[in-house]
Amino acid sequence: MRKPWIVGVLLAAVLLGACGDPASGPEAAAPPEVPQASATTHQRAPASPGTSAKAPAAKAPSVLYLGDSLAMEAQKVLGQELRRDLRATYTSAPYSGTTLCDYLEGTGKRSLVPVADKAAALVRRLRPDFVVLQFWGNAWGYTPCMDGITYDASPGKYFERYAADMERLADQIAAAGDARIVWVSQGPDPITPDRVRRINALYEAQAAASEDLVADAGKAVSAAGARYSWVQYLPCTGYERELSGYCTQPGRDRTALHRDDDYLHFCLAPTTSTPKPCPVRSPGILRIAREITRMIGRAELG
Image (cartoon, rainbow, N blue to C red; front, side, top):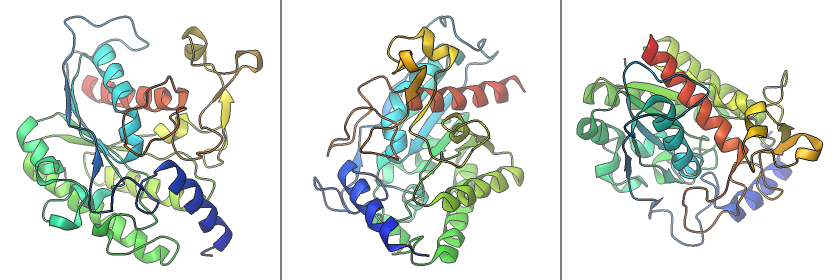
């Protein structure tokens, strides 16, 4: 297994700075060199799974979840879905503001992830069956390990670096254990839609050249027939209608994916200066978590 467009950039900077997004400048609560993360969490499966949309896999997998603020907000819900549907043993170690290079061993002080939580280090220690990686892409050069490379200034260089970091991280994970990587695709981005499309294509290419997997969670938060057109609301699913609080506008049979003031994150609570798991029911997060769980369950069944 192994156009810069000034108006869009300024708008993104305002929005991302306000919500503490990984692609923004440094958060007010801490300088760039200080990682914004929760403590690594470990969650074990209950003795027997509850009723779910998918039957439990024959073997209970162990899953490690790494990523940026998208993973930070979704970590608790993903753990719940994995434990319930697959009886999984689950560990999460997301760090807001990060990208792939932050989880590489050998990045030292230029990384926002401490040595103990590097991807390979965690794989050696935990021996997971799957490593789930979810990153928006850090297109704005927030983390020092990107060496100032940004999408708006140099798209070609940005994609080359992203692809190289993907391969290097996959190699380090492969050398550390037998885990399969699950790359989580991104949802639509209203500011840089082509960037998202190309990042997702890199994930697909990496998976095609190895035994990696791609969980197309981004499709779960996209409109039918419009994979890369950003939307704030989508029709409620039958599953959401059955769960209190997940169909946010039942009278209109639609649910909110994003807050009015945050086009990127899926948590419907305001983002705080101290990153933490989303504290409220958020349909976008649930949709993403269910797709990741579905992909891992399918892989376990062979």
